[in-house]
Length: 411
Image (cartoon, rainbow, N blue to C red; front, top):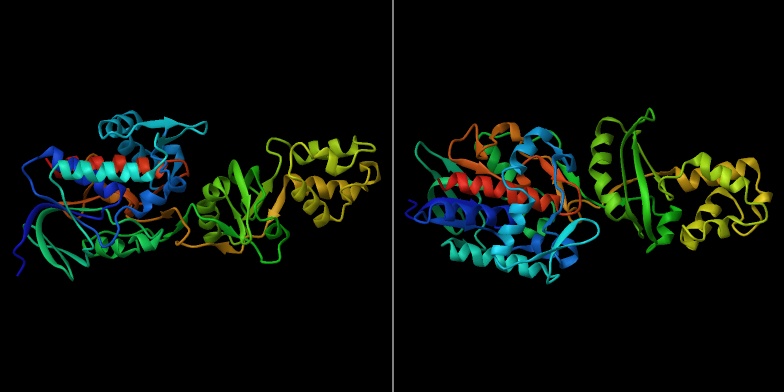
């Protein structure tokens, strides 16, 4: 028999779970709020975010930066706790944020530990009990309450906030078990659940894999098998020994993976000279005269890349451009501006920064994040079918949805 009782149990002590717990306790200081997490060390995702600096949010956040559930639904939640409120909240906790040229907001300490420690301290000051490693295995609903159980025992709670994450970075504890618990309480999970913000792999012998370490701003285009452009991202792009990474690749990865479920012929192409067309580059090459392709591209592309692209299409990089055949000129212009990327897969959840898919927002009351099918259950964070671009957007979803769930559960 379960003897311990709490008013609210939060399952998961990640960004959304801690936010929810803090605001649940603040909303009603007299209630007992308990957070349960299976990890031995809390906050793994916070600590590794932004290269260990934690990209807390972005200076401009709107629903266009997100995918998954409808953007109108996502917008309703984001508006409840916006960027200025996020900045004020962290300032209140002693964490001052600075804006970088990209619009990303980081703590002035450049340390993710600052963010995690502030959240943990805020939870403690609010009277929240955080228990770990206390892995939650089951959540059962009876007529009046929930029974939350694990190998550690069990707790009866009036309300439960499920903030157990998706499947990305499984070592942090987000191994997908939250989906099982959500289903057991009457929810559905989207037909597709897959890695988002994840590096993409190329054939091992593809010439780009020999350029590991080359990085530059490039445009990635996703096209359907029929050639229709579906989405495009321009940002820093990194060649690696396994394929491609960097912000542009991470951002387009979820759209590419999603597209290939229905259209195996969907294709990614890369333009190494954003804003310049194949026709423009072809005209440039035709007008070079004695100058070589290597010299022409020297100011805009890394030499290793230029030489590799020339080799791929059979063009001598140091020969005068006037010696180029029409076929060679066209081939090089295409390689520079529309290089097909024969993606073989992705690096999986271990390297993914987010999860695409989850519990549809249509199953929640968006003004409270309370379940429509299981009264007293609230959901927030990555377990929901919401994933954002790189740049602090997923954290902003965590802060906003966690705030709404917490303050609603606490009142």
